[in-house]
Length: 389
Image 1 (cartoon, rainbow, N blue to C red):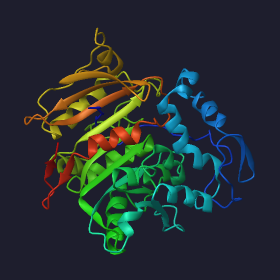
Image 2: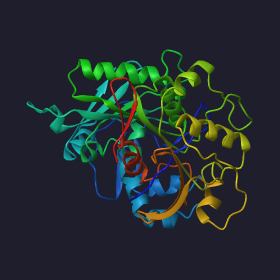
Image 3: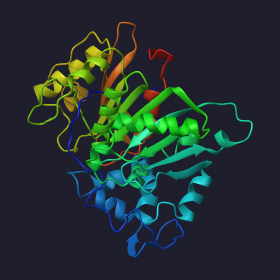
């Protein structure tokens, strides 16, 4: 069984997923473009070579082996997931919608006139058919620092909505937007009410939140605000730390009232980052470990984390900490190292993973690993965590 990650929380992390790497791909209007399997394609008014633009931009961040990433199944998935964002300036271009139609997913835009409240939904077509009796989990995927929710399609959750059987929601990120109009947890609550009010068959017992970079910070914030609503969270390229005090690396602390509320509910959390991802892994700061231990405590994990500066275990060396178990596995041609922590009932609640040869860039394994981790968890009517192996 493939394993995933989890880690910690608070409100920290710098970072933009694709900021400065975009080539004329905004959220506004643009010329309708027809997808081609290779060659040169025009995005809006900017000529873009595809897929070379992906490999070029990937290589700008970190001392990665671009050719190895390009040749891997994970790299190819990452490129495929990001294709529409890089090739279309109009996120609702007819060809973009047709792409999702081909995946049996209906893409829709909501609150489009308000940048702080805007959100997109990706619903399996079967969920909207007359006579459907199935309720679908909801996966919120927060965008990183580049702010454009269109770019969050590059994480792969939208494309996999029908495959895994959930409704994906890509909301505007208050952390990225610097908005005081609404919080990440407020976005989750508001959109759940909107989905239900508009007749979408949502399963409120299975609400999950994920995000990359600044989206990971939003994920942590939403989980703190809504611990009785969100069943699990996943952070990519973000080690947002649960900590009562700020540190040099993590300048945000967890508000006392949110921390107290979060400690009342278990909140499984997975965190993944690359080995060339702004120095996040291996962990070298005690403050980060202290934050991790608070998160382990919230999940009822007995074993505390501790810094490990040298180890013969390649996974521990890559991560900087050791949990109740460690593992190393090649997934989609890329080596992943992980360590996890269990509660008293033997349930893995917290896990941390290092993805090798990865910079600050969405891994092609993000959606698959996240869903495998999250989908085991749900909430009962009182907000208590339920585990289904």
